[in-house]
Length: 105
Image (cartoon, rainbow, N blue to C red):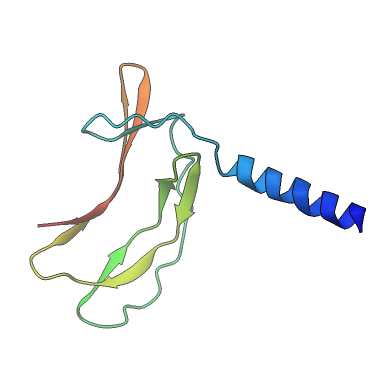
């Protein structure tokens, strides 16, 4: 019984401490400072469009606050008067910045 309690306590501690890790991500008005450039894009096959109002959003690397995560390409319904813009990754004064993509008017 003590062993089970110890394992649960250690597991809880690891999960709690793991959730407290913060990577430098300084917002500057034009993106978030990140640890480096994203990996190369993953080549994907575009499936057929599900309908005339669908807009293809190509796959991209998204900064999670700790690392880049691949968001696969997908179809989204077009938003009236808006267009999708992909994320932007830039190098300014020796620091990499990530600006998320999204819908714009």
